[in-house]
Amino acid sequence: MTAPVPTGVPAVSLRGFHATDVPYVAAIVADALHEHYDPSLYASLSGEWPRGFLVAADDRNVPVGFLLGVNQVEGEARVLMFAVERGRRTQGVGSMLMEAFFERCRDRGFRRVTLEVRVSNATAIRFYTRYRYSVIDLLRSYYSDGENGYHMARDL
Image 1 (cartoon, rainbow, N blue to C red):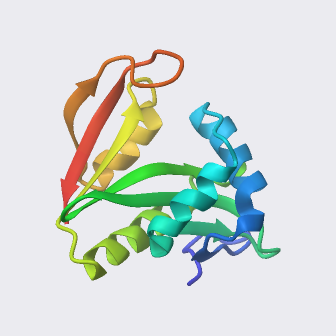
Image 2 (cartoon, rainbow, N blue to C red):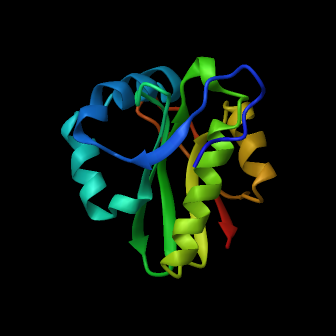
């Protein structure tokens, strides 16, 4: 699957997570989400629902974005991590990941998707709102630096 990107922008394809993706995904997480996780976390989480860990890769097969979804509640998927490399934002990569994730959620029979987002991340909140997510709760001191988060959800 190739993303609908503006003319002149290199193609991006979707694939599953590979163990060799860890350094790229970790760098995207550090820059975009301002979090640092033990590298073993990514491989561990990918094993729980492999089709829920989508990677957007460039023409050299290098990750430029990803969406890591998990299933912790019956009938519900959770977007645990979702980010796109800074230079690839606004090129359709995030939309491609989110739409493919919804498709995989429907295939599993999920009825709802949830996520958390920093209250200061207005760009992400606008993106999620376009995908019909709504704020359902304020999560006080949710992030490692003490910032509050919003718990958002949408029905499928």
